[in-house]
Image (cartoon, rainbow, N blue to C red; front, side):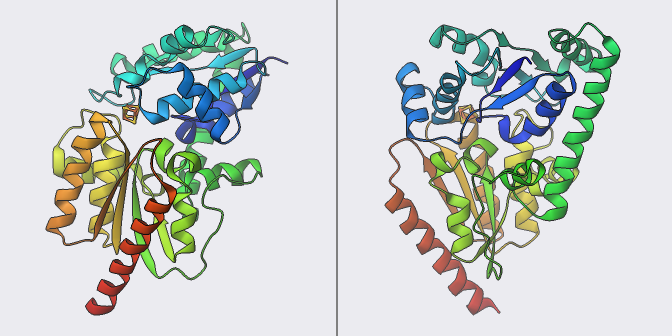
Length: 327
Ligand code: SF4
């Protein structure tokens, strides 16, 4: 059976169930790298240029860990997931950067996903991807339908069950989840956690942020747990049409949860990320207008776990005190 390697990084958290359904329906096996650990980070870091952001360094480490375990590596070049809304340039260059930095990588499946070029182009790209596994167009069509249904169920599951992405993936595949496993059954505080999925769900990058917050008595709400249409409406209210793919997830989710009157909001970004610095500023401004406690965490490979815990504890103490005074 052909094995397709899927690095557990970047778009994995949003699209893994869809990709897995597609490849398995075509008779291939998907092999996912382990949750990020020190070895994975170190190997990725050793190949990337210094200016590369932390999630991309981590991505390279995941690719390296899969090199001997698969026949193909799946690294789509995702240019745009919405009309006139573009991804950060790092995503577009991922397949080429991987070829240059990891020459031992198996052949890369690198469909270019650009929704600006229309549905017909997208279909053509996916049929071309499927043709690596079968020459029967009917089989590819069935795989696309299965992938689409799986993706809808995954997103609906997160909203209906009130669980975060990694918990939903764990529930679908019956595996332990990497983050958010220590559920607090009597949460005192509703805290919105805003950031890229590959930052807020990667326990190595964020020092187990979700499970820490849950253990401290917080109920966590992430962008993926809200309805996409509601996020689009909330985002349009603040910035009109999006220019970045993640605008609905950051500005839209920020506004949505601020209006839903969460007790506090934590935004998480990685040091040096240009798109985040602009988007998070918009959310920070709204939180200040609506007088919602707001914490901004900027992470990089040097972030100290102790310092992070102290900041979280201080923030939650402040939110709790404020809540007691206001009720
Ligand atoms: S959006 Fe920011 S964190 Fe994400 S890949 Fe681009 S620079 Fe890195």
